[in-house]
Amino acid sequence: MAEGPAAPNPVAPGPVAAGAPLTLALPKGRVMQEALNVLRSAGLRLRLTGDERTLRFEAGDAVLIVMRNADVPTYVELGVADAGVVGKDVLAEAGSRVYEPVDLRFAACRLSLIRPRGARGAASRVATKYPRLTAAYLRSRGSTAEVVKLAGNVELACLSGLADAVVDVVQTGATLAANDLEEVDVIMASSARFVVNRAALKLKAGRLRPLIKALRDLSGS
Ligand code: PRP
Image (cartoon, rainbow, N blue to C red; front, side, top):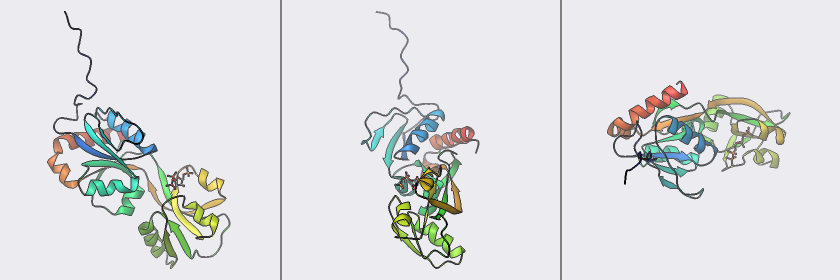
């Protein structure tokens, strides 16, 4: 019996994927979908089978491991992942020694000092998920305010009286508007970055260099 043309294998190595698969650390949630889109556009063939609880995908050109965004720098720095995608805000807070070759431009936001609308006088206690960046910012302003670390929904600290200011991410500004809060200073701009383990860059240069180039071309960075 004559065979028709072979169907394309969705997990066959793509043009930037010769050699052993890369392990990539991706943050759960909104950023993950955009990261998958850009990695596919850069030539990786990625097919995910599983559901929202799956934490590790053997996805063809890469093994994907999925985690909280704050953990991505740790997995990449320690070499468990060869590379990953993470926000510049999270990367700066982690202070990790990863190579950061590409600004992917999506997930643009800013890390800002936020206070209840109309608040006056110096803040004495500042709540945040970013204690290192917050302490450095306060020091640079000559502030002696106490820094309190929280795990999420940081704006609640202002609303409940736990703190008189917070440092948190502002993206659309909708959370501020909904809670009568005001952005009083921008500490840093952030967007998603492609980050690479420094040893993997040498050991897997044949896979990582073309991927970095393709991502740079796509993002214009
Ligand atoms: C982030 C951030 C703000 C919100 C800002 O929260 O902590 O709360 O987004 O976005 P907006 O300006 O578009 O309203 P996220 O949803 O990531 O949850 P988290 O606070 O639990 O980390």
